[in-house]
Amino acid sequence: MKPNYKILIIDDNTIDQIVTKQLLKKALGITEISTVNNGKQGIQWLNNHKRNFEESLIILLDIKMPEMDGFEFLSEFEMLPEELKKETQIFMLSSTLDPYDITRAKSNKYVKSILSKPFPVKEFSEIIYPDSSSKIA
Image (cartoon, rainbow, N blue to C red; front, side, top):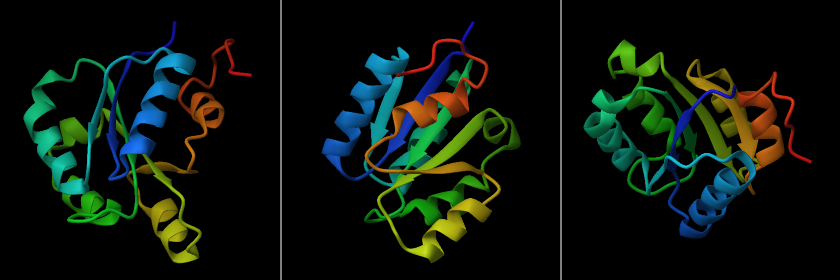
């Protein structure tokens, strides 16, 4: 049986939010998906919902955003309670080609993987459901 995931998309691009949300719903059957527009709203969302985590949380985090970008979010995330962080996986989702950003993302202990936009649903599925027999074509 596949694990149940709750998803938080942190991205300032509304079209990317909609596309990613639809891919998660249609391809993976994930229905608990929340969206916020920047890292600051992401931290607020986590603080408001941390008592409601019965399943694992996956954060899809954009790098370039106004107000608080992905790396600033990661700095704030580090200060959150350990019980919240241990049930959370973070995937950075970005169209950046900047080698410095990519290296920074890969070297962050909270970032499981960096994925390129548009959202690579097949690659994502293979990471979160490695033993699943229902691979996406």
